[in-house]
Length: 269
Image (cartoon, rainbow, N blue to C red; front, side, top):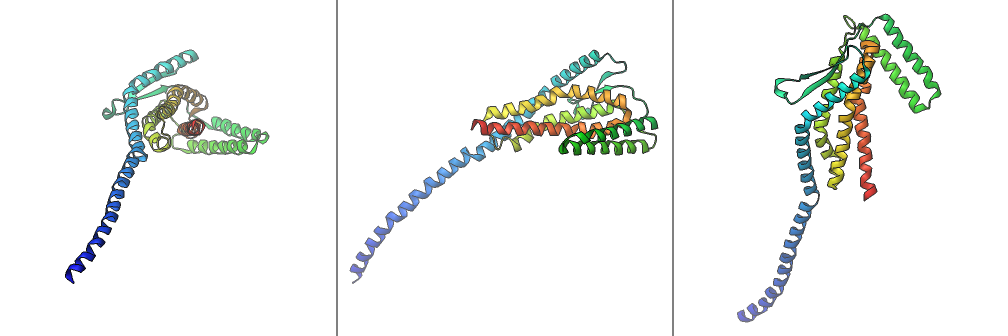
């Protein structure tokens, strides 16, 4: 009886062995395929994006003195072509801990604004509101908002103790520092916004270079235009220029260029 019972159990064990072998054989390869797909998919692209951002940031930091020298040369040429007295280029170090950063600026004399200058600004804002009556609604509302904001900022400047005595040099220096900060942070921003959806390395580099090129080429022109407008409109024009046509304009243009860059992915597949 015992012998027959053990003989009947042996086929059952033999029949169970192939099933265990199939499970063991299928579990291993699936785990290996999943690991390879993970390393070759999004994880690898994320690591590549981080590596590219670090490399481009180091490259921009290394090229920053040459970029500042280019700014100074172009700015000096622009001021020389204008041939206006009182305009000069100044450059100072931000702090001893940041010797690599140079704060380029335009120095120019600026008169103290009075009530007559305030009246000219208010009259100009009212004329702008009247002119917007012939424009379409999107432009009409935007320009009216701009006129209202400018009048409010001008009134706030006049109400300050001692009047609105702003320095063109300080204004343009802040614009330069913001551009330098945005330029150095550009690779990291692109890594977390563009590189995670764009896997082509050439498009990543070209897109980043286009935005960096905009920031580098437009800064000298922006400094000259701001200096001339502030010199003509006194310190009452400075808050509007900085808030609307300063960093906000740069961020808007960078966003517009980025939106165009993203479309490359759909055009090229």
